[in-house]
Every structure is written in structure tokens, then in C-alpha cells.
Length: 279
Image (cartoon, rainbow, N blue to C red; front, side, top):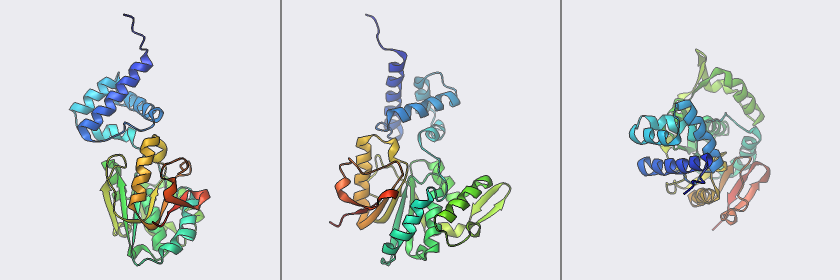
């Protein structure tokens, strides 16, 4: 019998088996991520890690636990910057913060915190607005190396010019240089910025509701999920928000066509900031 399965089909089979093995062995679930995105990243991993096939990579990941963190670097997005899309943070400052001021205590969730750039952006913004002392910030990611980098708060000095300009455009009320020290080509952000931060391993794919939050910011994560997984994550956010809490998404993300669209009102449409509906 002639085999009509081409190389591309075989690769797709290998990838699905690899993702299933990753879930069963380590409980990291990428099975419902966008196939095009996953395939692109896995091809990069296969090339740079030196494997001839995805099957060979699967064998290594299954039998060599030390390979897991190296492998996860390719599957989890670690590209960010401080005050990325400054108009988003300006909208948080000017439109959302006035509502948050009315609460005696606040909980903020940065979901998919990557290396911590967005987290520190929020902490600095809340310090400038006088809300830091009444706020607990929850920074979560599925990648332990990313969480460690976020907790360290150390970045290459050549990134600081962009961070500084973004901070200015976001309506910053101080100099960003007030918050870090520079040495040996790196900048280290002030330890006091982490005094109200809880770093935690949390998966939007498999884990449950995470507290009761006044604001959730999850930007440029959902674009890598398929529709079913997007709906799961958005349902998680809806269930995790306090009454009339706020949700911020990335510029290319939307609640449109989601089954949870009815759970939110558009608050700042152009910046993808939503408010949970009462009840």
C-alpha cells in the first residue's frame, strides 16, 4: 500500500505527539496553541538545539529533565519592554486609576509577566499615582526562568533609552532613572519595587481562578492561543475579577466573537481596556 503522507504531514504528527508528551510528562499544555505559531517556534528550537527531527527532540525532553527549561524558552514568548504601547499605560493612568482610587486595597494581576517589564511599569505607575502601598501585584508566568528574571529586575542598559521614552509618553510623573542603578552594562531596578509583588507559576491553560482582582493585564498572550483556549482564558479572567474590575488586552487582541464578550463592557476601546459587568 502506497504511503500518501508527505513530509509536512509527518512533521505535524510529530509535533502533536511532542505536545501531548509534554503535557503528560510535565503538565505544560500547548496542545491548543495556534499550530502555525507553535510549528514556527518548534522549528527554531529543533535547529538551534541540534535535533534532526521533532521525534528526537521529544525523546530528549522526555528523558532529560534538564532539557525542559531550554525547550520552554522557545514555546513561551519573552519579548517585552517597559511601558510598551505608552498610550495603553496613559489610559490606565488617566481613565482606570481614578476608579481604583476609591478602593481601600487593590489586587493587580499581570498574567504572562515574562521578564517583568510590564510588572515594573505598573508598580512605577502606581507609585507615581500614590496607590502602591495599598496594592498587591501578582506576577505570573508558566516559565520559571522568566519568573526568576522578573524577580531579579535586571536589564541590558541599551534597552533603557526605549524604556525611558515609553515612560515619558505614558504620562510618567518622575524620571525613570529614579528607579534603577546602572553598572557593568546592566541596570538593576530598585528592590523596593518588589516589596508588594507576589511571583507565581500559573498557567492560563490548566490552572484555576487566581484570586479576586481589581485589574488584570494580559497583553500579547491570547494571540498565540486558538479560539477554545482564548475562551478558557477569558472565562478565567471574568471569574477572577472583582465586581466591575478591569481587563487590559494587547493591541491585536479582542473580546469580539468570544463567548465571554457579554461579560464585559468596552471601557477604553482604542486601548483594549474592558470593564466587567456588574452581576
